[in-house]
Amino acid sequence: MTQVVASRVTRQTVGAIADGTFKVLLAAVYIAGAAPLGRLLGTPAWLMVASGVALLIGGGIEIRYTHSRSMRTYTRLMIAYDSGWVLTTLTGLLMARQGSSAGGEVWIGYQTAAPIMFAALLIAAAPMQMTSNTQRDASD
Image (tube, rainbow, N blue to C red):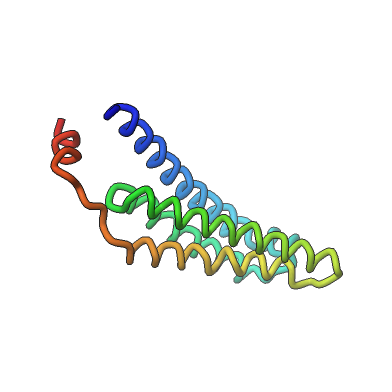
């Protein structure tokens, strides 16, 4: 039973690291392609760069805290982040479909604010408490 729990935690940790890594890679794309992506989405290049910087910070903090915060905290934060992302995407698409040029700004605006909020909540979360069994298993 201990092995099953350990592999589940390992997979969750890998998932959290992958999520943070995706944010860092997306940040690089946003920063490197700020002008063409901004034109495509109808946003100013500075907003694309700001979003890239926010994603870089958020993703880096997400990766950094994987071993000191509980996966329950990570899961809750990722569900909230991704739910907001879906709602913002739908809002941006609806706005664009109705002829508004602000859909891209709404979408990129979310991607600028949300990673910083995610990182702040992750930093503020209580550190993971290690039990004596967990400490013994970690030292083996």
